[in-house]
Structure formats: C-alpha cells, structure tokens
Length: 292
Image 1 (cartoon, rainbow, N blue to C red):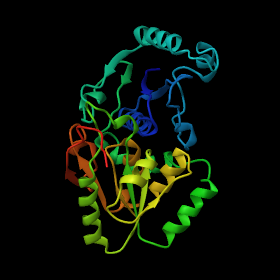
Image 2: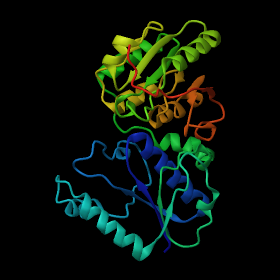
Image 3: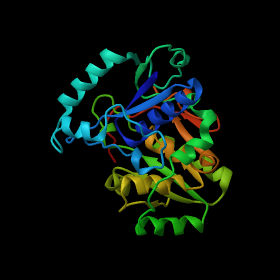
Image 4: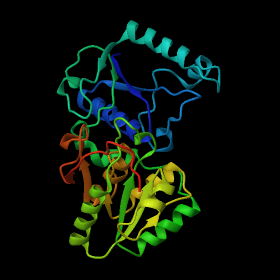
C-alpha cells in the first residue's frame, strides 16, 4: 500500500504546521500519510503534538525503534538520521519544500511514495479543514491552576493577547525582533475598534518587557509552561501576533480565528503566511538588538 511521510521537527508552532499539512495531504490525495517526529536528547525542542488529540499518530519509525537508535536518553541524532536516510533512499522520493511560507500545488501531484521535508507554512494547504484541525489540536490535559487564574481575569474583560518574541531572534546580524512601533500601531488600531480592553502580554523574555515596555498598562502572563501559555493566548478575544508560528497557531485556533488580529508583514513573513482575515502592518525587523 502506497503512503507518504511528513517530517515533524522544531518548535510547537512548526510542528503544528507540519501536522496540518500532513492531515490535509491525506485528505486531498487519499494516500495514507505517516508522520516522522525527529528529536533527540540534547535538543532544546521536543515533540509536543502528543499533548493534543491528534488522530494521525502512525509513525515512520516506531517509538521503541527510535529509543533503541538513540540508546535511550543520550543524543542519538547520528544514528536516527542515518536510519531515516536509508529508509528514504530505499522507499521514497524526497520532496523538499522549495520556498518557505509559500504554497506549492506540486505537493499533490506526486504519483510515488514521497518523504516531505519542510515547514509548509501557508494556510492554503489546510484552510478547508479548519474545523477538523481545531478538534485535532484540542489539548488532552486541563491547564494549571495558575493558568486558570488568568482565564478568570479574561472572562471579566475584553481581552487582547500580545506576543513579543525575542530569545533566538535577538542577534547582532539578522536580528528578527519586531520593534515597538509595530505594537504601538496595533494597539492604536485595537483602541479604535474596541474602545476599552485589557492587554495580556505573552513573551519569552519577561524581564525585557518589565523593563522596556511602556506603551500602555498590561498583565504579564508568567509562571506557566509553554503549553499553558499557548492555551491562554488561544482563549483571548483578540490578538496582536509576533512573527512567530507559536502565536500564529494560538491565534488561528481561537474564536473566529483570533477575533481582530494585527500581524507584522516583514521579510519572509509575507501575506501568504497569514489568513486573509488578519490585518497586516508592514514593518521592519530590528537590525540591532533592542536597547532601552
């Protein structure tokens, strides 16, 4: 029986794009699609899709086999890679993404088993299965008590989630952080459309926000694991996203695809990356690390 395989890798947002692509690929072609999560002991990222009620759980390499290849908790990347290269060369045609964040209709025209390698970050791949994907990405476990406290705050107000991503984006060359000018413009737009609202900031650099963000009052979401932050962000009424797949998915899976949404249009994060309902603000990433 013919089947395709889609590689699952990197952080949660990228994993969700890859899975959504695999889900839609099977629906559109009628060919069984397996997933291939590839992670290892020393990676900062881990496989997180199993935290959701996904139905596409059949893997190219089984859990036990992967454990043996990696010798348990040690770093077995070399052995895992070699085995997968052997399988690809023997059984599949390698179909590599041609251009990130752009739709490629050729993915559906393959007549032999393919191993799909890429990120597939264009909603056009899976948009028609939106309601099904919302169910696929329903989390199995309830959020923590601390997260429930934030939920109660949000229930009493018109909530706006704002995501500020930094960490690996802060570089002397190729800095990918979004300047505060973008957030200020988005907040003005929210004010015009909503009137009063409560701003909840989600960030991977909480100290930076505490010291530098002075545009308006806010509630800093902290003390949560990344999956709890994802769920809380998802439940906000409206959103201001970063150039990040994490906030992209938390927003996209929210009510009415995030309500009123402002997003940065910059570089590779172009129009094709975003749903047509979102409001795009043309901006530039920072060229140097932000100092305040």
